[in-house]
Image 1 (cartoon, rainbow, N blue to C red):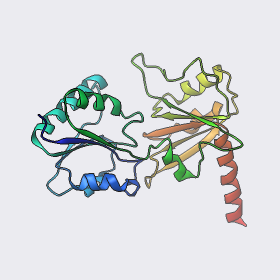
Image 2: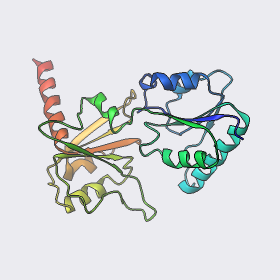
Image 3: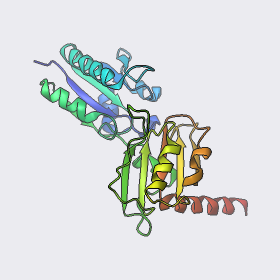
Length: 253
């Protein structure tokens, strides 16, 4: 019989002040926190001084399946020793956060759990830039895709059967070094080379950086960025670019 409850808590896009009220209350009672590598350390200040912090982020040369199995074992062991266990994840636990796998593991092993939603960087987080992923006149749908590396070393997140239009907003999580490959595949699937695209690194942090360019040039524009990075493609990026130009012009007058 498990002694404690595991809370899968979304840490939001980065800035500590973007946590939900529920997240801060759960962290305030946490006895042990297993956190991702990219978690803003200021978020841990919501925890009690005696709280134990265990980093469980990806390390170089450590395969993800092995890491996930280790996290599962750590959560199960902690549930036998503590009352309030927090698995702190960037963004929202159930959007490219492997939350489903951890929920299944906890449920299978009879460990009580609760999900505390967070602001996902690729959904609500982009609103910080004034970028609407949907727009009545420009975009009526959004597609969230992983841009991370596959086992073969290539980008593998583009569903080939789906028609791709600039009126559909595409958001790629963690594209890493595959921005050029992503852009090329989008163009091979019929998307115009002039489709507006943007990349943002360290969203909501003081070092936040945004670059934007046509699809054919976005890889070069983003070459100096540091991870974590989001990539957005679609007509709404063009709308955002026009808004930035208008705001800049107003400041100069």
